[in-house]
Length: 367
Ligand SMILES: Cc1ncc(COP(=O)(O)O)c(C=O)c1O
Image (tube, rainbow, N blue to C red; front, side, top):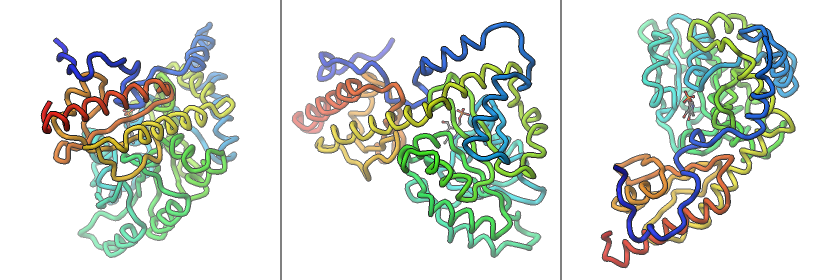
């Protein structure tokens, strides 16, 4: 039985959507239409179909002729594929202590790689080039795994972004140690929208910054499901097709993943949708930042907000409109917007947060 809705919320209009995550959102209608259009007759499997060729050409137009895109099922799988294809024996993967590969992939990278993930302390999800450069002290020591891949996330797990200059400095620090750079871009569209919202901006935070392989997220950007792993250099892509199959990321009926991406790339739909999600996060921030008892460490940059609330208010609010607790030790929650979050959803949600917290303070900090 679902919990009763708190009386302070019961009479308010509930948002139509949740603030759980961008992967709770439906798929965009253009993506659905593209899937339906692709659902006609026979096509060769495993990527030898016209839809997959169109996706390949679409990404080449975005990232240049040397780039090669590999469509895969999911984000964790894309990360594992990238790491397995680029890590050599005796090496480790270096990432932030908040990285999805480190905290939310059930150890899949370690299992697949048989290698260590070396976690660097992060601030607001970000790490710094000096931390990478400091790894140079282990170079050549037979008692330490050699730094092989720097894995970064953009936008970060905390909704922050690396500027193009910050990413370039990180890539330089990694390359100076002979490392390759992987960018987990499950939310690269949101980062790009926050950093200028152009193709040039996208290139400046990936290829031009010195990233070697990018996971271009589709699932959180409006697809039913699918990600594109894009290798920027032919020599790195050489083993990718074998690794994709080995890590179970080769879609058999690839045309359906490709058709979704073709819809997302057309007229830069990915950017339009991400910019909208980011705007809805801003709107929610502006509508809630003055509420007594609620605190933000900073304004949202992309589509995630991480406020702290009175602990007693979290469960009743989440029962009314779902979201996840982020860090229970600080009574911090995560509210995420998506391409389909409407202004009315945001306004209704903000009104509910305000009503419940007001009730809580007026009631002597009790519900
Ligand atoms: C930053 C980041 N990377 C990767 C993933 C993994 O995606 P999937 O759930 O498709 O494996 C997620 C999903 O939440 C994510 O937030």
